[in-house]
Image 1 (spheres, rainbow, N blue to C red):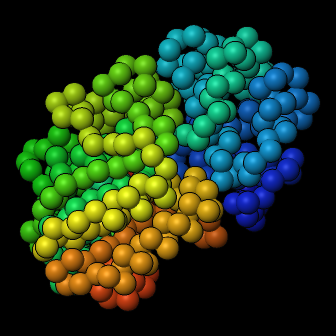
Image 2: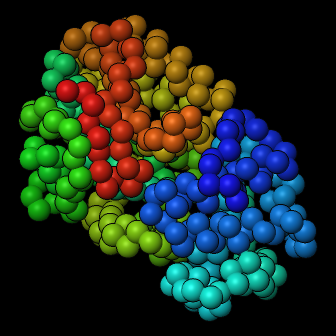
Length: 360
């Protein structure tokens, strides 16, 4: 595979788009310290050369846009689930990153023997809930408070998955020395900080509520295992975070509704807003999975609500999403009143390892 990512549009479809999605995912994994996941995705890509199983044929003939659908990660999640469950011991050397393994042959054999278990993993997008992204949300709220918005936030999240980021008020953050949240907190985050520290303000999370088209119950072991399968195995700290989040959810479940992003945002924005509270829509690594018509509805609903916003009833929009052109995850904020123009506050690691602050 080429070491240079292929230029692709999220809407590209067809056989070449499928091959390109797998090739780009391999390079993306390597660039994000995930060599094992890169090996798994590369081995899966070899199935496209002569699809011999229903699983491989379904991937090769994918009818939708494979990049937007995160097709490579759907397939990789299925293999990781087999490994975590101990159902495919031949995968162990790959997940141990051992040398001298014929990855393609091993993966082809596993697919043949476990096809019935693997096929359902292609039915929906990966759940990539990651607590480390909360650091970016908190940094953005500090910045919004610095712009004069009330430092009391009513948080609405789309694509909440298991609601791990809806519990962000229970975590502690050290953002270049700026301390936020309870100590010690359910989890503590000290991302590598690049640039000047964020503004220092006392902020409060007044409430959190989220939605997902396939919400995950962290208190259900089977559902928690599915979520773990989407964690890249190289990133061990994320498994510890998942365990901590499961414990927190057992004490008090996050408020998640089974709803599409557009329906949720329209419904929540129509509800009364408490005076002196900033209502904020937030999401991370989810926008690409939202269908174009729903993206348009969310954008229109936010613009309409923004036009009604006042200093006592402000509105904000925090997005940590991938810029597929430059291959960075960008932290972008809009707020009303204030024009609603997008402001890029910085870039961040997809799993919260570092934040490059550019807001000054």
